[in-house]
Image 1 (cartoon, rainbow, N blue to C red):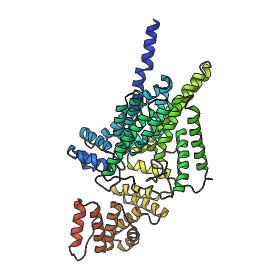
Image 2: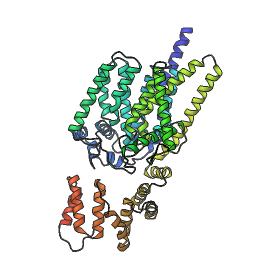
Image 3: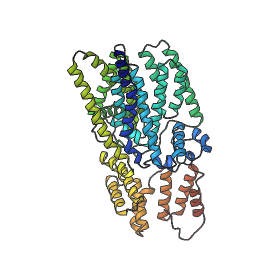
Length: 532
């Protein structure tokens, strides 16, 4: 009878947990299955011809992820292939794409549980896995289809670490490759392998790290030979800051990330704008320095006493480096960038919880109270996640949340105006463009759209003041060059318009529309009537 009880208990603690964990993930993210394509999904999925036929597999393996638009230096063929697989199954049904992301997150939660279980008891490992699965900071990575690179990188990274701890070094190194081809931040994986071997006192850690560095070197060699660098395109939240300011910014974003992690009810940041601090006296910089000091101190203090806790914190610090802004990024912060670093934080959380529960083994009341407190935090986190998921239903929901979190961001209001313009809701569109221009009179998109609307309404004199601001800019992305070209058309300067369309052709020589515009403008006509 006693043996039977033990077998039943073992099943309940083992197999049943592997059923409950992914089930909770899927149930939590079930509403996301009804979401639309949003943000960059239009370019990377809906209008991307390369994912719609396997004859383009060579292009998916060797070309930029943004292969139908500007070159962005995103070489992520595993992500492109995952989109192609989804398209093969679902066509352009957003349900299928969101289902894949939700299932990937559930699988990652299981893989994380297996990793945590190597270092701590099953109860602590389960609570740590639930934290990883249900924390609201994960909502962005799971809900944005174009952020799936984070999920794929985590998937292959967890498999690689599992193989490493199982003594399968070859498979560990082999799994590094798809992790690298899912997201560039996976380049720090050799450092994680180094920390893993050092903290767990693996006698072959030096050899394994050297082999991992060889894999990384091959990746970089192929990447550079294909013409990819690490410069990033301009975005809504791009910034320019010298190295001293970026060092201060690194401390500030570290503090802001940690505040978001411990406060599930914090305002969601679909996009996160942060001003670069100017001195060490900035409160967030001081807090960030304190957080980093505590992290490093805890790693040093626990690397012998509690290796799992030390490894988890080292994991977070290592994966924080590429998102810290020490190298200038196309935006200072993003919630989905924390998806892989969260693996380390959750591992250390489980290890710390395991140690506390062991110490309180003789104090049942305190032990139960601690577990209850963790459970309450997880429930609150799941509720906050459910609320955040609604933000990603469509572009309107998303950008309304953006302006709520960033009320002084002119470009966000411009994008909202364009969303309403696409629905032919001209009054709402003008309302948001006017708000954008009140914040920034030189806002590029708002000036162009207001000029276009006035031009179409026959108010060409009023349109000129807006269009003049557009043509004063020095565009570099393709969309901006095309916008300036069209603005010159509306201003009636055919030669200026032609020169910008020719610049656009140099970037995208295969565009039939650009070719048509150049042909039309090159032919003399008495009164050119520009198209939208």
